[in-house]
Image (cartoon, rainbow, N blue to C red; front, side, top):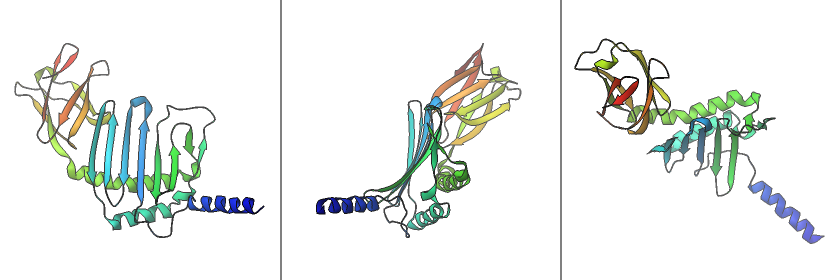
Length: 241
């Protein structure tokens, strides 16, 4: 009987040590990992925040871009207050009635100490309960704001040059599946027409669509400050010169 009683105490203590509740004060070793997945598009985003180091990572097909940055202890405490305000520890998900492994979504993990964590899965077969959608959006917005500031600070200009073969054509461009540009080009002389754009330096897939989706090409490009990408049209093919 004593052994059984002792075992019950150990189980209870184990449950307490793994309890999914945030401490009153922001833990000094708080780690936040937010991921988004788009299975059918073969792309993902990863955001990792801690007072030791942070990073933002994008994955598209075979290309991974990552940059690191830092946030202050004050920033982390403010974010911790947001987690509490929007009841991160109470947010619940439910399982879909049909399997949907291809469903894109996002996931959030909060970790502190050696074993404590809160994991919320909002992808695949799991989906947020409706009552928590607004809270979830507020939390994600506050996590993303740190990345947005870094992207704005790190973005550098590059140039896309169109030659006269693209005069008057409607052109749309996407950078690793993110919308970049959509406009009808003017009449272009021999010197070409230049469009100034910006992104965080890295390797990307540049998708160019002329007229409609039947005139589309995708190019792998390395973009940094001052990079020039020259495009022309030969028949139904888009050429990167």
